[in-house]
Length: 300
Length: 300
Image (cartoon, rainbow over all chains, first blue to last red; front, side):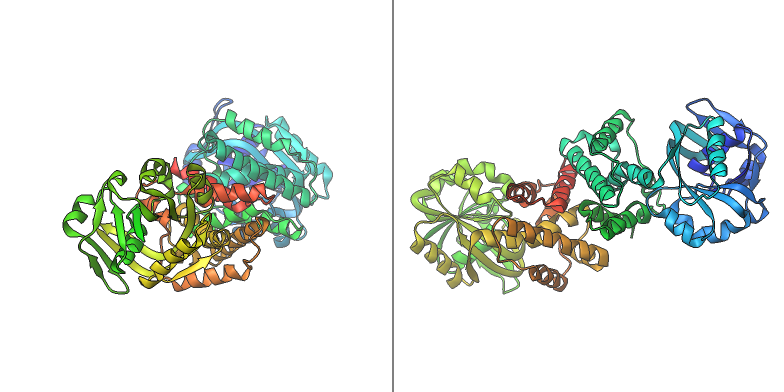
């Protein structure tokens, strides 16, 4: 299968490079890094061993890229308004678009932009960053959960999962909505609170009262998920998330990095949409809607 | 009646000076300002006309002060641990202690320190600041609500109210618990949110979503009051508070000033205690307990 990566940053760059190293045909869209990558290739500094893609199929416009079987979207959701101009030339009738993006509600909106397209949700469990041009710095983890949103062609969907797996990326096939809410249990408290408190995960958890509030916020997300029909997430999951965060190095979630580097924050899909969706199901996310507004105030 | 003012700052200084100007005998405890006031007296720059008290009965220790009929406590609640050493020498058997202090739960704690003492709650509606030694800067408002907490001597309690009134301070006799919760409707959202968002009241209200959240936080306080048996506060009161704040000049609540000047914040009586008291009545103040912990985190 042919792949295209739209948004070759820390996430798209890593998974695309893994697929390319695995022998798959991957076409990469670059923006600022285009010239550098044409000359020097794409480098992945990885906790599992560095590697280099010499002969990168690099483009600076999707119009020059071939139609592909799978488009991997690694854009920040704050750039999703670009999709109507970026995607169409890549799509065949049966192309799968894999959205490796943050938050809840992304698939609904992208599907509305491209009604017939087969969509899959990708949830990256990875710490990686693009620190220099043409270099992806992969610090730890690296697995991906993929959920079927609107793929009719199940064989192709499964081939995609197999391609990740045989390229050395650990994949789980998941129910997309449960997976999105599960990830929100960690994402919603930590992304916002590290921004508003101007700190890292470890500092939040080092203050017992703050740890209790973060835990309480996680429960709010779990209860919202229940209200939205996702009943498989137990309250214990909050304890597990706190525990695994305590085991991590001090960490700045992506929204904190966006805030620090004056990039737009993904408030819409990380906060506004899940708060709205829960509200539509009769559940008020008191803490998360307050955090949402605090973030919007800081983002002015 | 003889008065003593403990904590001669923006609040105690203003009301004490008004009583002194009204012809009442007022003994003032000073700390840093003592020498200055002994030499230059106490000056009130007031929106209602400046005035000066030449012959201030100034002290720098309560041990040298006479026993009085009414002690006005104008300390920040963060200094209430000083009361057991400051108060006793001023007290006769029937002395009233008027606590012009912020928050909810103060009377309970002071009563526990001084079981027999007659306590009254004072709620100042005033914008004033102590900007220089010996100078109280009274910007606007200036009324006081007073509620009986444990005064047995009702005649003396009413004489105290009359003394304020005839000294030019507008007084209302109120039910102390309702009055405290009513004030919390404004205090809890605005004090904390101006600190966490590092801004002033007017900026918060200029962002429509933030205005909605502040309104929502006010409703949370009103519902907490209901749960605690204070049922006289209608939801319309939140609208009125928003409206009157829009009519104010851009304003930094006392907690914001404390934070900016690296003074301890009154988190305990403004947040921790009301959240606890509501919790004891089966009501969870989701937003206020989150704000409480955000403040504690910033106060580290």
